[in-house]
Image (cartoon, rainbow, N blue to C red; front, side, top):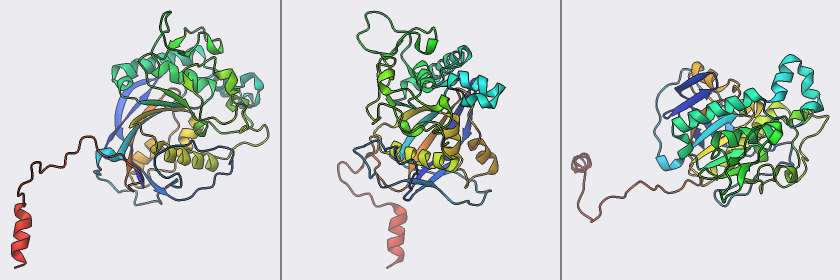
Length: 340
């Protein structure tokens, strides 16, 4: 069983306001789930059993409140980010039918979207998050990868730097300089955290062979097919299927060795994944969980392992009693004395 701990604060940042702090509790249980779009493969991991899959806990008393306490080594911190404004967002707001247009195939960021990226990058730098994130996981679409490298990348690329850039210059006609991979965490592209699959061309990706020269330092090794075999022109993935895929993604995420991970994804994926949770907390907190992300919004949460499914051993716990000595607590001694 995994919980996003209600006892630990979650920082929320949007492009329109400063950071605030709130508690976002979630609960997970493990049970088999069959996802209809079976062509998505769970990325392989050497740790934990892949048979465990997340589903949400049944509704509980909505007035349940209180704190929870868990061992630190049974937790991970995740930072969820929706991509910045894309050209499809602007066009779709004007006319929803534009989402059906191939003019917005694998939509890139707008100039305003890049401004949102710059502002979130400043926030990430100011709060010290850039020093804490060990891994950036990103949906393999143009707008999410642009957002990820702009927010968590190493800044402008300069000649003489002996590392590959995260992004070359002017990707997506952005007029942006190349972004270096120097002094930043590794970036990993994962299909499971993509937006709704099918019908909307903006949610169809390019081939991986097209992406590699544009984003040289992003690791695409977990993506099995060069072409986008998941997207179909006539069938749109259902919301409950997106939610199930999201739970599979979170389950896989727990098998990663990294303790602090950023995920750059999409509105629909994040919303339907998180909407399954918060049923054991106050309605106000539930409503904070189950709201759509703004463009370039960041929410930080803590995943807790309550089921001992593969947590790492603690690096800070100390067993004590070294050297060995008598240490019978007084309350235990009193209980022993009472039994005589």
